[in-house]
Length: 203
Image (cartoon, rainbow, N blue to C red; front, side, top):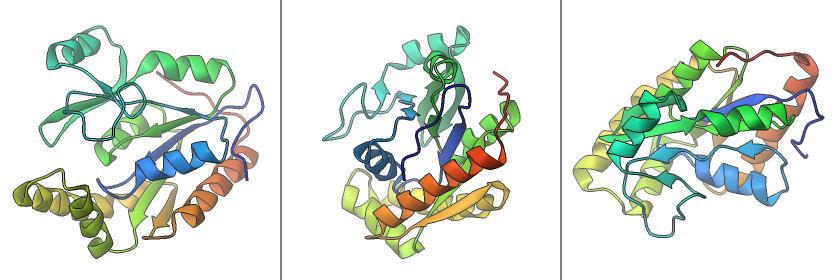
């Protein structure tokens, strides 16, 4: 099911969940299926990982440049996560909504809470792992953190899982079930458009 929308009825969709749950994989699958939504690209100060592309996966910037974005009110939301800064550029979001496009924000739980305050009518979807062992396996397979850093991420994930209760929907992304998870998300997006045809966003 295509999650494209008609002009004049765009939605903000907040896709969140713990680190390693597969948010990037979900976005990639939605794009592969031809979604016409605008997918925001997060700006971050963390180092680029093998296989990542600047401007596609993230905008990788220095801390001074990130601070400049903050001072110029150029970010919709921002937060420090695991010692690095992450933020969503405001201008591309406003432009996409003006063009009638759905906007998908891929952000952590802390960022989702910020969006909830400034745009409560957005659609909030929490992506959860099949199990914590699934999540640990994904984080270990990435091989991007030390054992100590990995344990911190797992402890944070447990805390973030308790946050799922205030989201509008929760979708399980179990290992090997990516397509099923994406189908659920697309159905939620389209159903929500019918339930809430008129929305106003504040930012």
